[in-house]
Figure 1 (tube, rainbow, N blue to C red):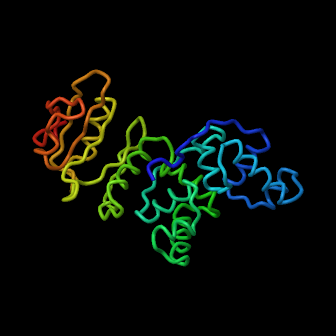
Figure 2 (cartoon, one colour):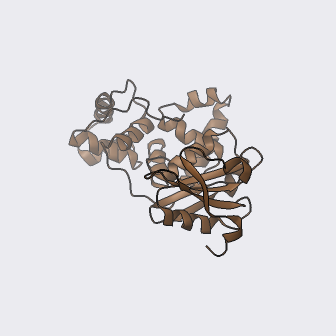
Figure 3 (cartoon, one colour):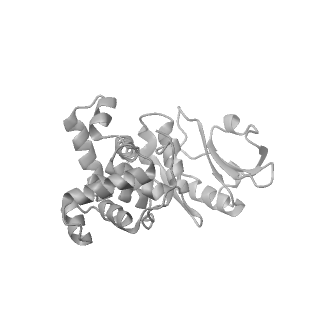
Amino acid sequence: MTALTPSLVTASLPPLERQVLELIADGHRDPEVAARLGLGTVARVRYRLDQIARCFGLETVVRPHLVHHGYACGAVPPPPLLHPLLLDADGFDVVRALAAGKTLTAYARRRAMTSYQATYLLEKTSARLKATTRPSLIRHAWQRQILGNVPFAADLAALHAQRSRLPETGRGLIVPLLSGYRLAAPATGRSPTRHLDIADGEEALVAARFLADREGYAPLWVTRPSQPGRPYRVSWGRRDAAFQPRHGFAADPILGPDRRRSA
């Protein structure tokens, strides 16, 4: 599920619909939403959700999908970011499925799970993110940078896309940079070389210093871009595979294994 919203429709919402979606994302139930906004009945809340789906060009009302789509297209301000959180492969998978508009029943069928197993997984993931409802799970996933348009979320999605199960995910490192967090995973037999592309040279060196001498991140080196405007590449693992010039990178390391400590 690389694209969570295949045909993203940029839409603005009327003020009342925006308030409804924000309250749903915060974890409020329909009676609470109706009371807070003076809508009177739960049926009127559901009518507003139908209107939101129409505004987004969606055929069905799947609340986690509405919340994710609202954040992604800018109709609702995304929540403030918190420190990133790593989920295991199953937790990440169920969050992505709900954000993409899949029901839990459809998700369980796709994964050949029983409804009990899928419900237990959802409850465990919700507890990890401190979410009380399925729409609020999406809000917390955006806050924790599991979803969204930040570099950490992109790194996480790319890592999980490589294979359905990632035993090394638990050893992944959250790399703090001035421009935001990045995610690095150790080089393994299946992925003998890994890398991070970072726009700024100084930040690339900061990432290299952070990863240096850690298990699974050696040897480590940084490669300058061969063309202006391209990012620097921080690489680690099997050097003979990764050191070949690719994607516009010059074979000119500026930080090698022999300079890790002094850089």
